[in-house]
Length: 190
Image (cartoon, rainbow, N blue to C red; front, top):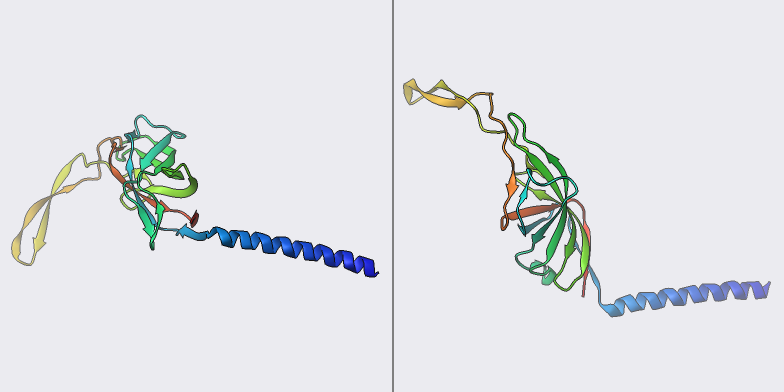
């Protein structure tokens, strides 16, 4: 009975010592957890032209980080880091609606070669879809408008509901884009 208790005690003692050693090693390294919060915005510059006419779902795209990104005094994303993205969806232009594409940012590669997994979308005009907006109006009609200062009113051209055929959407090389983070992403720095 005492031998069994000593064996159990020695096993717990060994486990406790291992946990203490692992905990002390991580404290000696000086790592502190830093994370990009969900909803954060990041700026980047397109490395090449990305167009709905030539791109298809599954194509990889690359963006360059133009400046150091800091949280507090810690440089978390160095200048000239590369964001690697994937085109998730491309929709062709139709009558009344411009073409669109959805680009997800999957990875960050720093100049030193360190890779971090990211989860973000390219943010364009208030949404995570590049394009997909209404095409130009095909016809305009004259409509009278009356204001308190002009009793006779005046005529103003107003677009009709008939729209032109949609156009292709392009992110040009060197164009600045914004990413919006989908979830918290931990980054570890010394």
